[in-house]
Length: 332
Image (cartoon, rainbow, N blue to C red; front, side, top):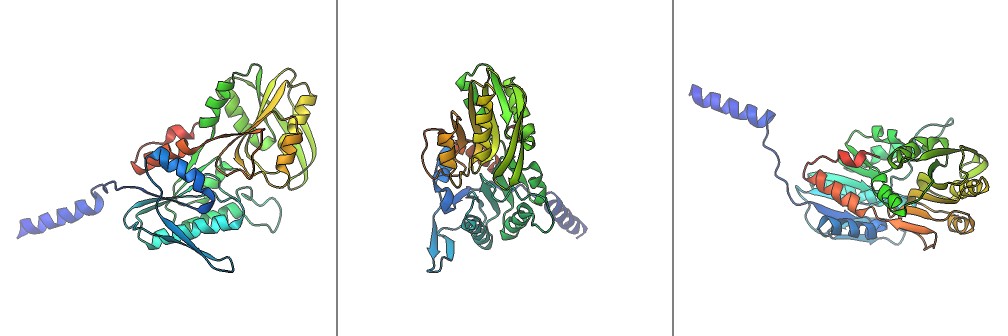
């Protein structure tokens, strides 16, 4: 009797505090409507297929996504960038909630572009910190992990209580830059806030660095820009995390050509390209703009070259699912 009791206690102890590892089940992949093209590339690179989701839409614009297959006990990856409109964020939240209520074991929000990230602090009284708010919304909806790329500010990772895998697009941009074989290369930051990113690229490429100093009259409107550094006779590459109205990039490119640069091209991870951005690019002295497909382009342009991030995300998602290290993807 004593031996039976002891065996029962030991069994309870070891199963409670040293549980057997959960067997790795098949991962399931779903996409929000705004990122269907990228999601198809990701799952193809992964060696899988997208799951079946049907979205019903009411006449007033309200919509309801529905998983048309079981996700119980599975690791679910939901792929979708949350660039405006707000419907894109809402669709991600609804799909997370649906997966949670369908008893998925792990729910990973794969957000190549994390929207509202520019509101990461209070820069004046009585304004929201939207990046923090959205982090809480994602967690409340059911996300147990976040995979994203080139956040506008690194500290946004600290807004989450769940694991965040913050990938760097430099892992795909650097090989592309090296393939161009540019001589007299200089890396440039379009503002003071991007100097860390510019220095990381310059270190990897063993090049010089220059920085643009700008003052804004208001959001998306530059009142003054000055160049810190010499670009005479240089092939300049501007690096930034996003391009919205393209005002900063085009103004910086024109300024550098005036200061004697041989050529100016730009690398920006997220091509928001709102307003008359395409016209600004066409009229500028910028030779080309290199972007990822984290956000689908609204229109084609001879000056825009797209480098896909699908293989990067597929590799990281495979490593996450199989509990392997992904630290190599964090190095700029």
